Image (cartoon, rainbow, N blue to C red):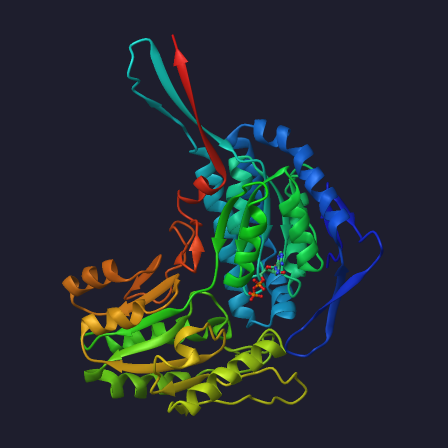
Length: 477
Ligand code: ADP
């Protein structure tokens, strides 16, 4: 496994020699140590990306696309190895990690295709002796800062379009999951990407972040993470008026109407809520269930939750792994206690699961009945395997409850009524709407949020806008 950083095509240690541990959240075992880099190494990485920029952007788009597609193929070739590494540092079940590698590769593949179609426009001018040409050009050096919950996919859905558009990159992965990023760096070299096109630095985030934001050679920041850190970065990005993509927190409502296909809604709920132990920014946070089917839905959901298996992600049959760290467990516990103190009832779970020989970081899949607006669960991202449920009477109330959030990333609802489907989809103040669908993420769709969930879109042809400048040439004949 690669444990050094990638700067200008060289595998590099921290200047002062410092390292940071990467630990397995399921066992507390140290998996590896990675460089603890700071401002000077980050400065070098920016320099390498800057130096590589001119040659990279002048290559034909089809040429760049070949490298990006090759990287995707190499990820798929090494899917088993990469998945294992991901489970070791992140904890998610191996099957989910394999799924993430395929998902991550699909963003590279998609971007490679989109990069080839990045054409401009000719606009009819207002004078006969003029032409207006619109060019789309790469934005330059891109800083990529990513979280630990999807250690590979959060990188590739930024890196793929950045490279395909002609940008070069400095990546700072989350300190919990740097190994997946470094493994991707190795494959980038194997794919033949020129030195400096992809650079990866690991270490304490604040200094690396500040260096990236203070350097005028960096022209863009693409960030996925918490709203709080997003705000800090946005402030810093004002120094050089960086272009920004901000994929921040979410608080997804999951609405089930009386007329829904309940079996479908329950299986979607299970996947949508408990994937990655509930540690995803689009996972269902608030279940809003219409009164007529409330008991029925709850009973079925409880039964489905009973089939989940908590354990080490590497163990056969595990469907819910550990939470990422102790702080995450404390947050889940605090949310559950808060709900109970405000009248909520734990119907299933509501406690840690202690497993022989493993770290005390596993939380039982949980259902809480009787959620109210006063509970923290209703407002804050729990980021754990907790499904709070409340009943509603009619469509207007469901929409009002669903939109009562500062976040606006993903939302879900289930109905068989086609008119209601379009009404509700239009009314939800969320960038992503799963209408009878609990798994909307895919490379060809524009993923992104509204309100405190940020801005910018990843996926689809839309993502190319995030990495390109529009320039027009007013051409006098
Ligand atoms: P999460 O809650 O998912 O851990 P964070 O927003 O804390 O989300 O982290 C997402 C990414 O942002 C990680 O790579 C983390 O290291 C990075 N990060 C955290 N604080 C800063 C900062 N001050 N400057 C730059 N990056 C930061």
